[in-house]
Image (cartoon, rainbow, N blue to C red):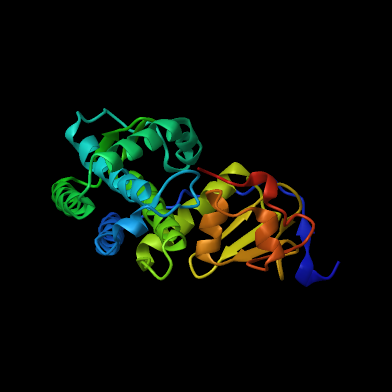
Amino acid sequence: MPEGNRLTVMPPARKRTRTYDPVRTRTAVLAQFGHLRQAVRTLDERQLALPTRLGDWTVRDLAAHIVLAVAGVGRALERDEPARPDLALLDHPPTTAVHAAAIAASSRELAGRTPGLDALYARTEEELTRHLAAAPHTRVLALRAGAMTLTDYLVTRTVELVVHTDDLNAAVPGLEVPCDRQALAAATRFLADALAARAPGGSTEVRIPPYAVVQCLEGPRHTRGTPPNVVETDPLTWLRLATGRLAWKDAVADASVSASGERADLEGLLPLMR
């Protein structure tokens, strides 16, 4: 085989865990929640009653759930601090399905008893800002799934906020809530790394420009030249795939994903979280 396309069978390379800047991550969470607050305050009762792609959730249910997704940061900061974290960031995605039913019930209950969503968003934004200003980034939080550092948990909140921004835009024609660049970057990188952790290896390169490139899947490991197995897509398509909003076969069929090579089929690995 030519030198520029050399392949060799090797054990997966040991990957260093990605770190996230605490200040940028806090800023991203606050910025994205601010975008959502500005959008939700414009919704009328007809729009709030619209269906979403999340089963039987209405836009109102979704808007209430977004509040719960960030209000949990403050509640966790008010609890006693665990001695040490026992849940790594990349261990978080599989835990989300376990609590999905309880979270859905809480979201509907909050939506049902909160006619004024704008006031709820304003209060939540003020409390989140206050809590984050006072808490050190190394603070450990006691959560349902385990104990995590504050910065790691905020990375998971970027996924919640960006994915649900996309859900909201899909449900309400013309809404067009923007995605904060840093929030979108953190969410994309986190779920790309979660894929690499689920299927370690170096035979396939997954590209999500401009934010992430990861190697995954066991098999012949690429060392030089053009990779033989490549998957490439944009950040929002990747987030939809990783969270079950979009099926792999549909993304390939409509060319929102390009996949070349014998080991470029990720269907059996997705979604990574729900």
